Length: 505
Image: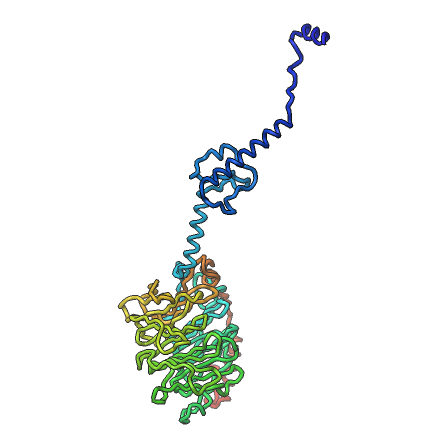
């Protein structure tokens, strides 16, 4: 030790440093344990004094909170420290997420928010009424028919912004097109026109089948092999891909098999209250294909079991005003509800289980066409139909009714002509509309809709290629001229009109 002191005096400092501190670890651990017990007891005591029963969610889990957090007021909630990777998270973010979730819930509850009408495209079918519309099950192709006898084919994937049809034909010559529909497999199209024979075309418009025409001199229409008067409507069976149905002014509804074009499959004959023949103006299958429904000119709606064609299963004799043409019947997706669009400017909804009186009625919906549509939305919460207008007297509209309350919840002004056909495709979530001035409109939403019109609006219009003409100069010599003249002389001589021609002439 004396050596250390001498060394320190020689080097000019008092010592080599302070003595290291020593800690009693046992005492420190004991003090920490007591402090933790006291804080836990204090926290439990404060919670018991508040008089509220603590749930499992409010019980303390883990070690007690530090003093700076326990010193906060009771009415302020404790903010947990931010975790790594979630540094931007805050209570305001929680509020925003809650509001967003509430908005999504509101959209789910409000069917109007699901209507895809933010964007539209217009397809020019012609200048006359578009009286038929059809989309294949996949939504890739649209086919339109009109009073101009034309059927046009549109391919969404193949079109550009010019929006031109890739094929146009007249399958029924000089007869107006009444109805078009793709089969449930999408490979063939049923064409119903103003003549007595329905046709089936393939996807490219080539003829597959033509129904036979019946004998118009036979009184009993069940004894003829086919229709004898103008067709009004037709549709495919929803489950059996080879079967379809047509109705006609001859007072019958007939089912057909695609493999047998020489004779109908079965006949249903609507009857009035007196047992007389009535004309069906529209027909449809139920969603499961077990029922066949027809709307008639005397205002009745008659429904048969598909396998029993003699007597009706359901019969409403005063569904619409007698003499008005019921233009459309449509079953809901759940199969329990039937909607009917009447020529008496009404839209009615019926419950199949109680078919005597309509569930709901909407009036004031002008209808000038015998094929004005009505259809259900894909979620079955809305019912849609179109309205008719006279020329230069307003705009045709798409009107949306809520199925539960049958209140008009939305409408779209389409154009300054009648809205005849409307179709809401469940897979595309797009609405197709046929109008009285030759237009076919497609309504869609870039977010809520899928494919369809979205495929063609993003493609720029193709530039027209100028045809290159190649011209070749022909040199006509005297020898070539004399050779042609001799050939002409021989031909005329053989015909016997002129006996002799000389070169001088």
